[in-house]
Amino acid sequence: MVCSDQMSVFGTEEVEFSKESLVDEAIDALFEKRFAILLHQCLNCIKKGSSKEISLASRTIGLLALTVGPGVHAQDILEESITPLSQAFNSGSESSKIISLLNCLAVITFVGANGPEEIEKSMQIMWQIIHPKLGSNVIAIKPSAPIITTAVSSWSFLLTTMDGWRPSPKLWQESVTYLSSLLDNDDRSMRIAAGEALSLIFEMGSLEKFVAETKGYIDSSDLEGNKTKVRFSHIQGLKGKILNQARDLSMEAGGKGSSKKDLNNQRNMFRDVLEFLEYGYPPETTMKIGGVALQTLTWSQLIQLNFLKRFLGGGFAKHMQESEFLQDVFGFTPKRRNLVGYDHISNTEKRMYKSPNSVVNKARTQQLNKQRMLSEGRNIGHFAICVGYEDS
Image (cartoon, rainbow, N blue to C red; front, side):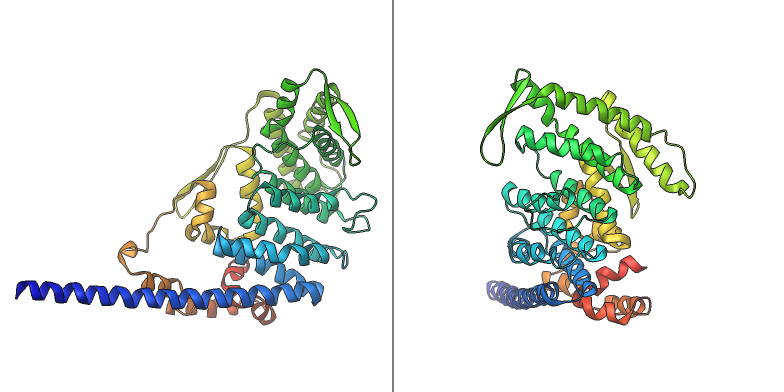
């Protein structure tokens, strides 16, 4: 009798487990279908939509990649989006559109790239926008300061993932030389973006590796495969020039019409650059998210943090508390204040808790809908909640 009762209990548990598995599979299948539909709708907007529609679609694709996290879905997003995004860069030069496309390309590559070759491909697209060359198919006219600033920030963001990458010395020289020239630009945001990019390059130590492997000259090849030699003393001279530029920018006096906040941001940032170039100490930062400290100890981490904060806006803290991918990126463990017993509930119940159709999320959505334009909510669709946090 006892044995029979135990078998009955085990049988019930097995049936319940089987039911839950079937529900999970059904939800997964539904998610994949909605995922594909949303992605294709957004890509159609990028191909045929207005500048505003392209901007909204680009942002949605970026949010979609961050939501699904690394894996097959994120790889599909990158694979299917890279060509439409590349083509969209040529279909006009409106700043807001190009900036949204750059941010989208950076995020989907950061999450979905399967190896350094795919990352480098996206970085090359961005570099052609930063420094257009004859014969380039990307943006025929000179880009605006906000576009260049975003392109440099996006390029740096992806460079943080390329530890151990060894481009040709000539490519590094070109990158460092051009970024150094941006430090003399009148646009303060551009100067800051270029300063961060240069600091990251020196943090990665590529130039120091080259000097250890060469004797004054570095063999390189141009685009036609012709061998050339790059004098390393020239590269070292560039570092000295950048050091002097950073020193000047860290002490720049405010001019007429200059924003005090922007000026202070520039001074502080270039003081960090100066200290790093002279003594090797990167800036350390700390911010609190839900009572837990998120720290950055390198330029690479700081650049990743700043980029994702800009992209997610007011939704950054929410994403950090719920995204395992972002938590892994920054080594961050959030508090689970309101989720007592969360780890002990079924997968189905967890999905219901997170579902946009839950009572909690419905109430939140209704409140957010009052704070944003109806048109934006329609365009962003399933991910309206994520975007809405930026407006709050």
